[in-house]
Amino acid sequence: DAKTTQPTSMDCAEGRAANLPCNHSTISGNEYVYWYRQIHSQGPQYIIHGLKNNETNEMASLIITEDRKSSTLILPHATLRDTAVYYCIVRVNTGNQFYFGTGTSLTVIP
Amino acid sequence: DAGVIQSPRHEVTEMGQEVTLRCKPISGHNSLFWYRQTMMRGLELLIYFNNNVPIDDSGMPEDRFSAKMPNASFSTLKIQPSEPRDSAVYFCASSPVGQGIDEQYFGPGTRLTVT
Image (cartoon, rainbow over all chains, first blue to last red; front, side, top):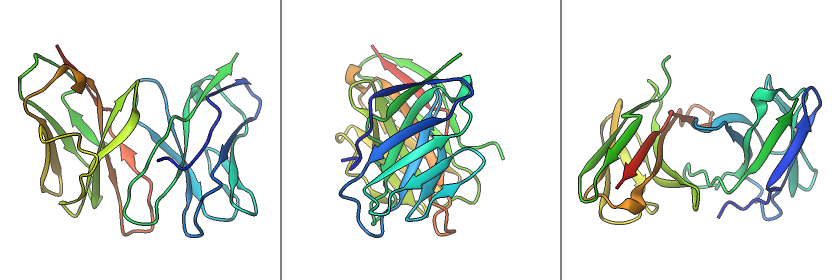
């Protein structure tokens, strides 16, 4: 059970911001939101994670709503190499399991 | 660092044969994970180890699957006997658990085809 809901697919124009939404309405207080992506024929790649506050790194920004029931991953200037499946994951609070769900297939269009 | 190393990258075998997949985690990482990915079921966690000890193998599909981690730098996933429905991409990942970082680093995967 991935505990998250994401759109199946999205398109984004090259150079524009890609905003990928995720719903996690049953998230527990001590559960983090993680984002991974999987480029075709490669293993998943960690992007970013957060608990309550918004986070930013060299790859992306993560915006978490105040009630923590949803979040948005932002790729500020999408490139063709950002075409991938993006997984939003809520980490269970015991152990280290990651349940990936079906993700959002993002296509960056030239 | 070379990252997580998996071998072989591709494996084609006949039904009934034994298959062994290998993984070398990133040096210093304490946790190791085996995943399977198919079009029908997506990415599934099979088993994970902490400090070489299997913690959760509830994702292992059946007794034909077994995994070992004899030391901190090596793990195997064995399927015996293999069946066509085992055809999938198998990923190994490692994580530096206990260092405040929970992200997993994935290997390139082994594409298994059982005919």
